[in-house]
Amino acid sequence: MATKAPVGNAGQPASPTPADMQMSPAQVRDLFLQTALYSSLPMDPITWSQGNTITIKVPQTGLAHKIRLEVTLSITASATVSTVNQRAPYNFITNIVYVDPSGVQRVNASAYELALLDIVKDVTYDPSTGSTATWVTNANVAANVWNNPVPGTTPATVSFFIDIPIAMSELDTRGSILLESATSPSFIQIQMANTIIAASGIEQPYTGAQTISALSGTIQPRYYFWVPTYVTIGGRKTLPLPVNDLQVIHEIMGLRNSAALNTSTDNRITLPTGRSYYRVLAQLVNNAAFVGGSTADVAGYKFQLDQRTTTLNESLQGYYTRIRQLLNRDLPLGVFLWDFTKRPFDSSHYGQLDAILTLGSNALTSPYVQVTRECLYQAPQA
Image (tube, one colour):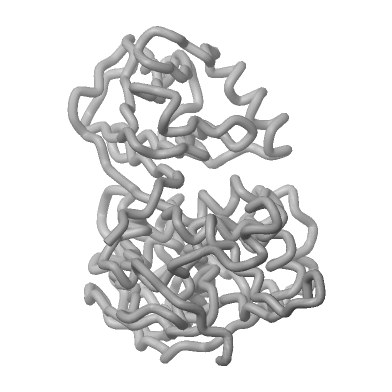
């Protein structure tokens, strides 16, 4: 495409465009979004391969927004499975990594973590049971978009989709990459689940004594991007690239913490420094079950700045009340959200950030907290 500009590190423009010099970064972003062509390209389909990890290159085209994975599987069991676990169907994909042209991991999280992030960023997005959304009205369409059946002896179709964000959102180009000018490719790694059903536990899609007799399907990746378009400003043609937005990395990282969880005390999730935080999610698991439905599981919820200023200090009821007001829905059991989008914590304004869950009196058996963080930070310069 004939929109190439001089580039520096990781395929980013090396110097401001005329539009950058005449307008604020927010105005350049708005102009870009108003004039760029939002587009998509199908990538090569992936055949389901249980337990394998597949690496695929992302097209070097346009200004990257996201990659969507459209998953369709056919599954048959020896008998009707006992339990469809909370993370299903997303945990058919256990991990997703996106690596940019400079070799920086921008995304490293499970499909379920990315699905949770989509829900809290857009509460109408969740197509599963419990959503307040009403857009799923056509049964045939709904089954093709998202279907999470209880497998049995008759082949059943599992379908779902996952977005792997590169930029912050369709209306926010921070974190995007001008891939068409990158000197090296970027790629995604998709790890497919090795265990589909087990006699106990919640890590796999299904729990039961049954066996999976047949499983096949495809994953269709689709790349979404903007095509920059020249505009006339003050009688001059210019390419309104949001250069400032391309100098930051949009990072989504998942990390499991299974150490030092204690009953009846504050359990801290200390966030890495040098980043501006927008959202943090935590999944609390105890004794192979999601917990958080009573004060015996979780007695309180807090957020602390620099180990001394507690900005949020809520009971379990207070937390659930605020989340319902914030999202107009509840989150799945055991999922906790710290949302900083109205006042992001800039990396220059804090020394330490701690998300805190005060656990209750229930005994702990192999507990862990799965933490997902969404943040921005300045891209390293070559």
